[in-house]
Length: 246
Image 1: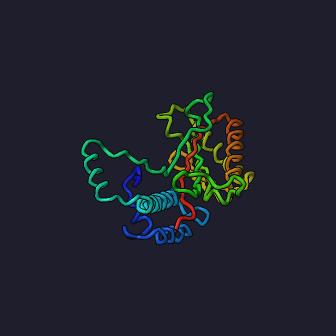
Image 2: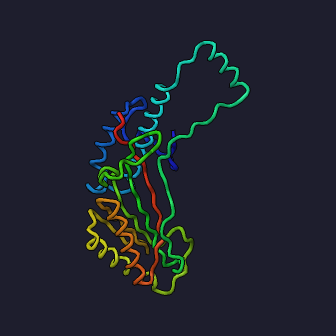
């Protein structure tokens, strides 16, 4: 089974036992989603942990069942031969399905690093086939393919290292970001939003009803930042959630 990049037990996150069935895992996820999804007032970081815990456990259950059901039962002679063959070579490694994908997006290279705003596009996507990870039919609505789309905005951009700012420049940047964010909430019809200025930094979160609305918001955000001599370093992160597995 795939692992977290930090020490969190997915069984503890979902509140299920290690022998829980796929249905029990799914029911626990749905129950906790009603509490932790950002659209109902939950914290984005908590929902991301919940979503990945569900992905890890459900994928493990499905892949384990698939291997059990599809593997042919060897005859005694074949089993003996396979045992001898394994002594001379290792069995081929079977790749585990990806639970997360990260890729670079928009980067304003002509903007000084200290004036770059970090923007993460986070999409929790439904999947319908555990083997090929194909998207649902392209004619399906966004609701059929996406569980959640959000923008996570922060400054300073931690990926730029130590910053050299002119006197009071941080105040000017923070004021601009607050203004841009408030306008973004209204002009892009965000479903929900939250922002916070603290310790000389800015963090903001916006969620949308579809991927198209989220991407349009990114473009409008970039224009608004450029108008204030700011830039964007944007990347996308997809979390993959199995769909219709029982």
